[in-house]
Image 1 (tube, helix red, strand yellow):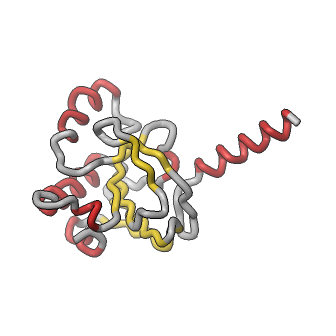
Image 2 (spheres, rainbow, N blue to C red):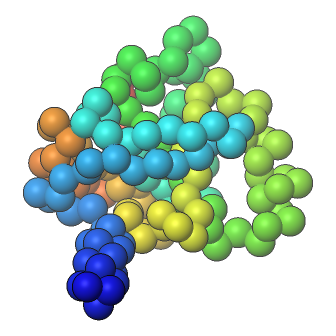
Image 3 (tube, one colour):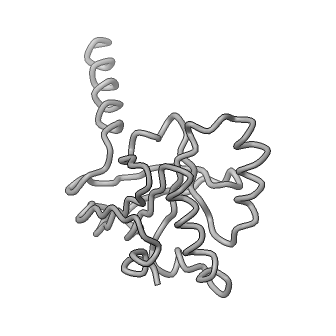
Length: 153
């Protein structure tokens, strides 16, 4: 009985570790934002904008800031911004990156060691996951700020 329980647990952990891809189903991914508030990425989300490095994160931030002055453009579009800061030294994230992020008018969901394997990482690219009813229907890799207008307006 214990062996079966352990096997089921390890299988479940292994399934959650696979990066999202076309036909993946999101049941519920819990990620905290820059204010330590937990967000749930579930079937209500239509678009995930994922930045895995500083360059792609800066590009995404620079695109979103002017759009977010009057309204929450991410919420309006059913989108979430996810940034991977798991490789950042903790002192830098705590004293430099997070205070800066707290000034932004939108939430940035921050990956840590528990959920960093849910997303495909590619330096210099923003990975855009398009979802329908919690299922990934399309994955785009973009490298220009202007391409974001196809996903967030």
